[in-house]
Image (cartoon, rainbow, N blue to C red; front, side, top):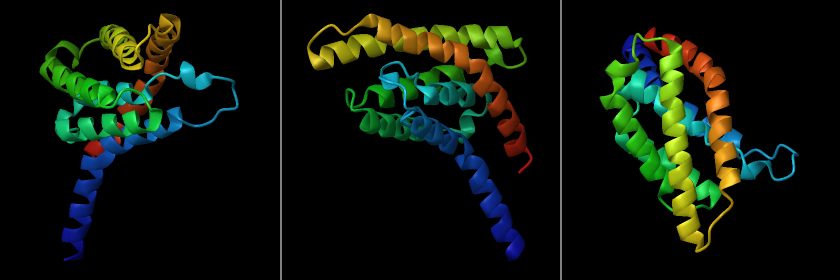
Length: 170
């Protein structure tokens, strides 16, 4: 009986890992860092997790989880309701379909793919947010977020690769 509970707990832990990582990254991106207006250019860190897990373990990040993660980010940031919920569902769905383009390939291909996704999300976020607030917002702030996302992806990828290996052994 104890083994049964232990194996169920291990399974649930493994299944929750991608979602928990994304939620932690959302919280980290909202931390007050003591840098004036850093929140204006803080990249959507959870995008990296949704992209990564959408490729390597989409079974552990269902579309409903991607939606909930995005909705949580929308609520915390005060931006257009549903923006990141829609973005994360779309990214998760597309990456799961494009897995073969990335799995087993050089990291540079994955990084390039993330760059395309990050810049697409950056442009879409700028356009939707500008429409939501009824004025053109400074595109430079959004572009900075996108470029920071691309620059930080290798660091978070390195961490998530190790977590994926650990999750695979549970």
